[in-house]
Image (cartoon, rainbow, N blue to C red; front, top):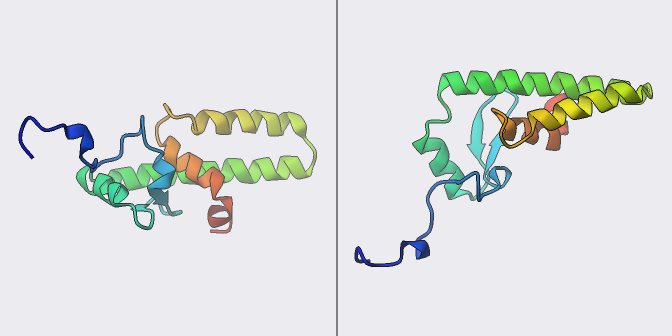
Length: 121
C-alpha cells in the first residue's frame, strides 16, 4: 500500500468507544481484571496497547465492580420487599454509573448485564 492509498479500507487495530461497542470486545471478572472476549483481536490489542491490566486500573475497576454488586443486591432486596421508591432511586444511580461518559462505565454496564457472574461471586 502506498502513502496515497485509502486508509479507510484498512482494518482497525484498536477499539474506538465512539464507534465500537466495548461489550462486544471486553469482559471483566469480579477481581477487576479485563480481558478480550473470545475472538476479539481488537479487544486484545486495546488491552495491550493501553496497558489496561495495570494494577491501578484493575484496583479501580474492582472497586467499581464491588459498588455495582452492592447496589444491585440492594436493589433486588428492595424490589423483593416492593419498596418502589428505593428501587427507582437505585435504578437512577445504576443509569448514572453505566452512562457512557462515566468513568468505568463499561465495567459497570458489564456487571449490570451479567449479574449472575458477579452476585454469586
